Length: 232
Image (tube, rainbow, N blue to C red):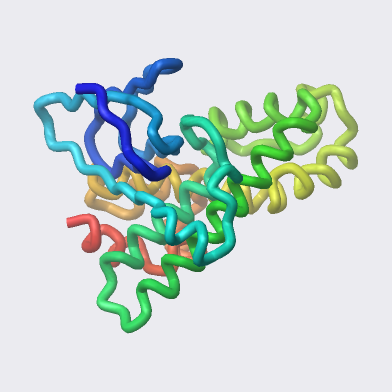
């Protein structure tokens, strides 16, 4: 059924799949899909007859006023593919499940970071050169492979020094960090599919299990084993 929410909110699919549509687009969502919804934006959900688990964050008017974040800072309804933002959502989910003395403090800090990232992404999109989008598509498709800076530069028809210098400007991290974030993001979708962490590491393009665990803990704040238990 068509419905809407009075406040902006995020939908993050942890397990399973579903279809979500609004007046402009239809999204076929699988584990790892992150959607942002503008307030009072009519939409519908179709869930198949399989186990589906999602994580929802609704941002109240009081929160925007309390932290001096303009409610109009992020507009529209859209899917988010930026791994930095998606990993922030995973961290928020983790914080809500930990028996911590100060979960609210951590969640508010992460939410402020999240809206800052979304705002930067919006402003950058308006002035990004064409090669940035092309590169992001290549990295999302081939992050498990061994990528070469010179070959990437040739594909994009720009100088390697230009790519190396401007990558940080448009992605807010270096190329190696961005690739590791994509790998960790993928691993989060596979933790319930593979029992062995070595298999997850191999599937995501990590050199070995130890490298995977280090990168995972750096980006999520807990080990893969701990996060897997949180998901249960």
